[in-house]
Length: 444
Image (cartoon, rainbow, N blue to C red; front, side):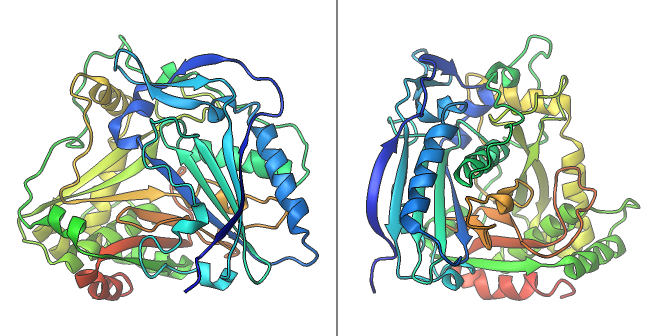
């Protein structure tokens, strides 16, 4: 089989105007061990008539140079601080990387789960495995597909920005490429000290088991390390979500209603646990990102693009999770989300910045990351909106992804989840058939 993509050009793109030369500190949340990797997005665009590929690539490259002016730290390089206390960015306009490539694949082939975890790897040819060894914080690859469509692969150093921050940058970058030169608001805000420890809050341990280790009673880590993982993709539309909410209410002791995120997370977590066939006394955790921009006081300023999330933590034994129904699981998620307040956030900040540099363990853990409300489905480089938004590599992280053109209204999740969602996660091969059966059959 031919290579997925052939690189035509790879260049370093520097800011189009002079930018400050300085060293900027990253926050305690930015610097945590858990975030020292690359977020990798894949956006797939349908064919458009009369697309001039050479002109489009030139426009995208020029727009990247312009976007790196207000976002100049994304043209710097991340390194550990000399005293080992955290990370910092050396800003000398070193630049980002832009790659143009061509592929023999069509748009339709990229809209479903890949056959194996790394099948789409070449759609972001420069994979930054170690983000602290002088690599650019941003890599952009524009790949032209055989049917005239395009795939945009983008990698961000997660230590520099979170999902919301990276999506803000991508939308600004795309608007410049599309020739939209309206006022850019809000302007990007650095001010990373806002997510550092503060003397107002003495050392806290109020993070509900987030960093507690649980015994591996089932060879869990060995299974996820050594067994081949098979990517899966399931779309839940508004009708599916409504049915899940009704089912959750009927199997819960709580009187309050559930949001779409809570029932979807609970259902996927429970299906995952049942498919893996784990011992009944194995403790499992569901970790999920919670945006804290409005959960700390004072709230973070608009335009803050650093990491401004913590992980909520729901925990259960396999026996209770699998036997008690989706309402029980959704209730655990709901309570875990409600626990994330000012004290919880400050407790996490203190723990990840202390001498131990706490980091979540992987035993028994499923991590859910919500990409569905970041605005990635609005990223338009002049080629229209993407028909697919997902990861370059679908792995054991469970991603909630946007589904375009569904016409659904958002629910009241307060920044959590819209009504139609694509759920992608890679499952050990021995469990994938059972997982797909269970996740598609909530009443089973």
